[in-house]
Amino acid sequence: MHPRGACKCLHCGDIFEPDARNRARQRYCVKPPCRKARKAASQRAWLSKADNRDYFRGAANVERVRAWRQAHPGYWKRRRAAKGAALQDILIPQPPAATKEAKQDGALALQDLLHAQAPVVVGLIAHLAGTTLQDDIAAMTRTLHSRGRAVLGIDVGRPDYAKTPDRSKTGAAYAAPI
Image (cartoon, rainbow, N blue to C red; front, top):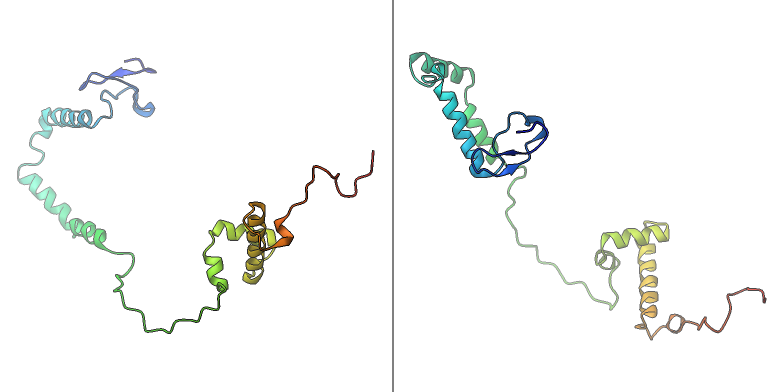
């Protein structure tokens, strides 16, 4: 393996680019079977050392584990309890109280008009209107909506926006003759 280049995986044999932080020691690629093979090889190497063969056996190691468990009571229980803890209490759905229906007067309510719009559109209209008052935003929304319909030729009921002047025949307003 070249210190700056790619190397061959010891498990699958594919060429791979090792991680820059571990380039000199990385011998396996990141594929799941190769990672399992690397872990198995690492465990074999660890167990092949004489000091490690009986690491988990014998009276001394049993005492070592008991001492650690006494020093860390409930270690294995804390994780399980934290995993099940909810950030919010579970709410039981309740049926809504009986309410009377509001009369429809034909016009949309101000709140309905604003909530029907995307927040970006409401924010843009508030920016253009220079205000955050719902009445002003609603008025500007109605004006922009009717102008948009007029531009698209949909709004025939509003004569002030329905016709656009033919600008190809006239010059710009207040333009001096040449």
